[in-house]
Image (tube, rainbow, N blue to C red):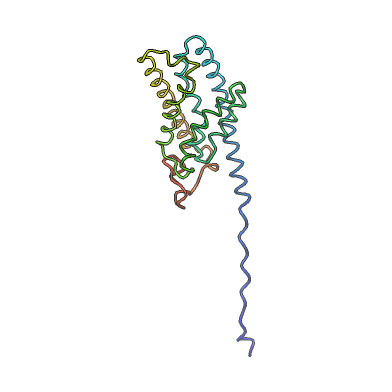
Length: 212
C-alpha cells in the first residue's frame, strides 16, 4: 500500500497528574484550622474552667450557667469544617491548652460531635447541633448528681437546675454556630471545608459546607 494509505497512530494519552499535592494542602489547612480554633477555645475555657471551679465551691447551682461554653470550640469547628472528628480534635487541642481541664474539654467535645457520629457523618443539619446540646444538657446533671447533691434539692430547684443546664448548652451551641457562620462569610478555612459531598450523594448539610 502507498504511504498515503498508512494509518497514523495517535499518541498515547498522558495520564492525569495525581492530586496528592491538593490533598496535602487540604489536610494541612484542616489541621491548622483545628489548631487555631482549639488554641482560641482553650484560652476561653481556661477562664471558664476557673470561674466554674470558683462558682462550684461557692454557689454550685449557678456554675452550670456557663456549662455551654465547653461546647463552643467543637461546635465552631464542626459547623465551619463539617468534617468527621473535627470537634473531638479541637476539644483535645483546647484541653492541652487548658491542661487541668483536658478531660472535661474532650468530654464536652464528644457530645458536640455525637449527633453527627450517630448519623455516620452523612448529614450536617443545624438541628443535630441542638440535639447534641439538649442531650448533654440533660445527662450532665445526672452524671454529676453526687457532686451537686442533686437529689436532695426541692422539686422546683431540681427542675430549674436541668432547665438552666440545657439552656446553657443550647446557648453555647447557638453562639458557636454564629461564630462559625461569620468566619465562613469572611472566607476563613475555605480550603479545609467539606466540599461536594451532597452532590455525590455522600452527605448533606444545612451549614456552610453542605451548600456547595
